Length: 622
Image (cartoon, rainbow, N blue to C red; front, side):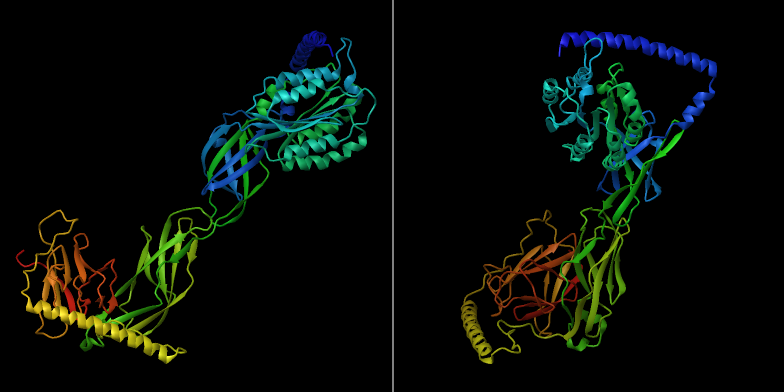
């Protein structure tokens, strides 16, 4: 084609058409003045309402849900980006919900250009410009200015090249510039439009990109028009706008225009006839209007998972329009509590034989049950309450943070038996989750001497007795060696003068030289003549070696460095920890680990064979 000739012809053509258009507007004004305002009212009443589509809904920040809204008015012009928040109403499952935020953004557009040419494309006007040349220059004016980061462009040419999803407008322009429409007669079909819709349905490179198809076609055989309703549903299902340019003689194109107008109106597009004398739309302005979305953030009222029915209603220019239902899944599941350290058996002990039958003497009086909560839907939220059930009766409840542990009161369990326990939690959405029911045995026992080294080996059903005898003999031999060594060391120390015990050392964490505000008393269990002790230091190590211990207990069952006591001022109580002794340190007949255990008033403490009842009192004159 001759570019200079086409440019000049296009200029004359546009100039002539602007004059014709101006005259037409003047004629319309004259008719409007003569007829009056009635016809305007009737026309406005017949205009269809806004077309609204929900393109996307994201519940990642639930209960805040983000919805992307696309709107088109009755004149195929996009709604202005300045609508206030109160113009919108969000309906979740048919019920209005509060809107938290509203904004507008341009996510970009996927444009599919579909050329369905015939011999009618090559017809030239009296200036020598073909219809395809007019179309090419209109496409070129847009492609030369289209930003790469905003548009994704696909090209489909019937019987010719095809380019899927290119972000380079120059590539599309080169193909169109080198393309020559066929000069022989050929029957166009709907196949290129079907292919264009398929490309438009593909996932765009950026979420939220709007989709539009421009179908530039020669008039089709009337039989093909029967397939348009099926394509309407396909376009609506993927929110694809379809616009049609019918290229041919005015007489032939006008016959098919009503069918194409009905098709494009249902997809928020436009249909027009181009015979070579009409003015083609400015694509830069057309596509710019379509590339705009409203983003609504609303506060969801859903309290269960499943499919959510979302609609948006807009009141604009005295019109109220509602979008079709948009369905999206919501994965919302109850919280799952987990008991971290649930014992199979809890032993309550009478600390003294003479107290048997006195419920107040049973220890322990409560049990700490740590727990944590998991959210299988990965939506973290706060908890409202946690309830601990025993035999399906609520016995402990937490109504505020921290939700980390429950205290099980054991004072009412004075007889042996099995209890079923479970933990139930409720989150801020009102969803309730529970652990399974677990059995816990409650045993009642009397005070017994602490277990000795290697004496806790018992026969089990199904095991060979000789194996246990061998283990028992080995343990007895080891105990004899340890006792002989301890007795030899004890005799050596009795013959040597004992050094003066060192005073208790202050804790490293301590910042004051004042003694603790509570004294820990050690009352002997063996006999009333045995020595009683009291502890009013921040930290003390007890053992049989004066060089390693600040509190010396000369007993064969006590290791040189046996146990450590320290005072926690914030809790106002002492802790005890075993230091790897042979005979062990025991509280209420349970071994104490190296991490330590808090001492309560009335606890039974064994250091080796030495047994004490520990009590607290205030310091006297200190």
